[in-house]
Image 1 (spheres, rainbow, N blue to C red):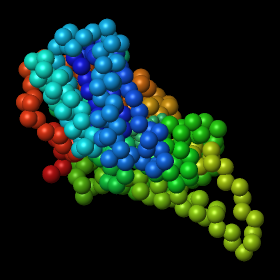
Image 2: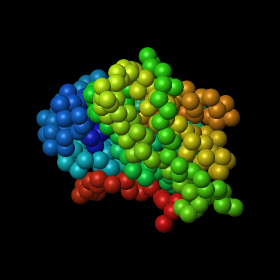
Image 3: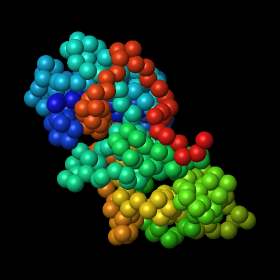
Amino acid sequence: MKILGIETSCDECAAAVVEDGTKVLSNVVTTQIPFHAPFNGVVPEIASRKHTEWIYDVVKEALDKANLGPQNIDAVAVTNRPGLLGSLLVGLSFAKAFAWARNIPLIAVDHMMAHLYASQLSCDTPPACPFLGLLVSGGHSIICRADAFDNITVLGTTIDDAAGEAFDKVAKHYNFGYPGGAVIEKMAHNGDSGAFRFPLPSLHKGAPSKEGSPSREGGHRYDVSYSGLKNAVINQLDQFRVKKDGAVQPAIKPEDIAASFQKTAVEILVRALFNAAADTGLSTIVAGGGVAANSYLRARLAERQDLRCIFPPPEFCGDNGAMIAGIGFHHLMRGDRSPLNVTASARVEGFKKKYP
Ligand code: KG4
Ligand code: ZN
């Protein structure tokens, strides 16, 4: 089964052809970063316009690279949630037209479930359910339990900013570049992660209940928070900018800021994740999303030899069409089909919540 996957939820215009859920025949990702970089963030209006301009060529390139024509495609999978509505609608409309013209199934896919699936695109021994998921992107930070590819229960989320968003905002404030994650990781290689001690949020005081699941009252043991860290890092700059009584201020090394921030940002994630592993007894962790490309996060998780941590290769961490086509295959095999009037949604839907 050859599935065309289309992804336009944010600022990557992407398409891929994947055979039988795992064999990537082509994977084309065109990034709009240069168009958004002057604004230090994604401008939704620019994003949807660029998707409209690029989508045809991107899909054509994905077919060409796979040495296939539209007549060789068995189904079209497309992200229809969550994301920027205008951007989602471009990919969704294109996918509908393709499916209608070829009279093949259309499968609307959840972007975050696809991120969780991404590691299976290259994994020889895919993880057996249940496992813990760590979904970390520019818009979401989710610690979850997966009982099937689309049966996901959210155990914890961010209570304010997402992990990737914190990288982006710190980079924006310090003018490190956009998007912030990859830039900060690169700078951190030449910095001292002990140079600044930034605070960890005090969210995790509660003990697990008898059933092994904490109540909200018992503390957000699997939740994360980034606004405190973000403000502390940003204030660090302001503090050094202010000349007090003419005293000479110590020079601040940007690489030290990057390394110290990255260390704390990752610590926030792994602390909540390790709580979830301890309380649920699940020892397999599958990561996904742009932040999962971070090598410090990978190294930090690798320290826990009692856990099996599975990461997608870097090219499948960020947004891509292969993960959409890959998970689309599993929907197709189960008999799922989306009607041609299926809509887009900006929100995460279909994830079960641990808490009401
Ligand atoms: O999954 P993704 O490509 O798009 C969304 O669905 O949001 O994630 C993008 C996010 C951005 O915030 C970016 O700064 C972050 O992932 N990111 C990283 C790294 N590469 C990308 N964060 C930390 N370290 C990285 N190496
Ligand atoms: Zn994403």
